[in-house]
Length: 320
Ligand SMILES: Cc1cc2nc3c(=O)[nH]c(=O)nc-3n(C[C@H](O)[C@H](O)[C@H](O)COP(=O)(O)OP(=O)(O)OC[C@H]3O[C@@H](n4cnc5c(N)ncnc54)[C@H](O)[C@@H]3O)c2cc1C
Image 1: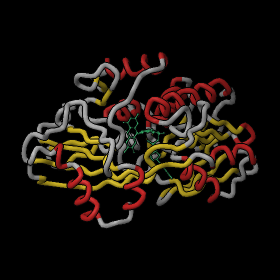
Image 2 (image 1 turned 30 degrees about the vertical axis):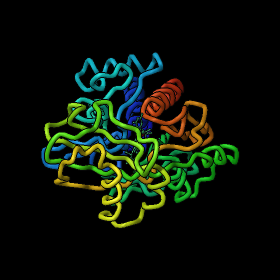
Image 3 (image 1 turned 60 degrees about the horizontal axis):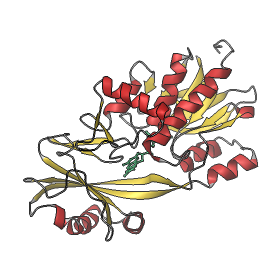
Image 4 (image 1 turned 180 degrees about the vertical axis):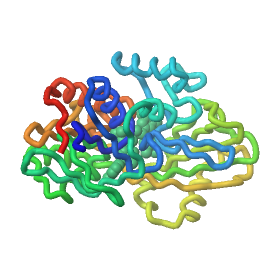
């Protein structure tokens, strides 16, 4: 069966595009390489402790997005960060939001796309690890840009030079995230801390966000520290990050420490437009490579690309 649209990536951009397209009646599939949805809106459980490991909160500055966030809140999946008017969080963890967006959508998990080929007859063929080739009339890529472009390269697809240069200009910073369970309350302020010096850029106590009862502290390292230490053994990295966080650990014992490595955390030089569409290939790009990065931008990008494609969906679905 050939789909109208295949979307690669079940992060907030891919799922936002999927929601719009599904509402327009398109026959679509979202392919996600991980076991869960959400991408960098990620929540991890360690015993009773719950951590937001990637995005810590999101904003809703644009009217179009504020109404979407209100819908998430009305569905019981988003809350304001306790004590903050401008920050939003997923209820029980960030993944609550992408899980809501994925409801009713055909999301195929553990489907890692390894190459995207554009067939001479005008449709897309996707190679998927341990699964059959999938065909679609249109393709939407929402993985971080270097990963998205690598799929096209693997499929021998040549983009128009100007578009290729623009998309290649977006690079990403890495981020090392340490997830600590403490044996008692931390000394992290409720609103979290963004240290101005040292190897850490962010310290937050997930129990104060209402995610869990045990004290679960997320530490994010600076891009410089993360790039330098990225390949080092977990124990060495954790030791340095825990040492740097002492002032906020309240003298508590760290009963569990886990490291998560984000190779692509935030874009550098994101593009000042909502999405990219290549009409001659029926190919779209969305995600936080557009509009300034972050959750709000990624969602707005996905929504905008979804509407763009929906407006041109006139052809009836074709079965091969
Ligand atoms: C440590 C960290 C802290 C952050 N803090 C904040 C914050 O506080 N506030 C904020 O607003 N933003 C924050 N961000 C950024 C925010 O998380 C992202 O901007 C946003 O979630 C990006 O969404 P996306 O859908 O564009 O991409 P992603 O969430 O990365 O989704 C892309 C999806 O594509 C999948 N994928 C990739 N390749 C393939 C493939 N070959 N086949 C199938 N699937 C594939 C991935 O598994 C992923 O699920 C943070 C990010 C990180 C990592």
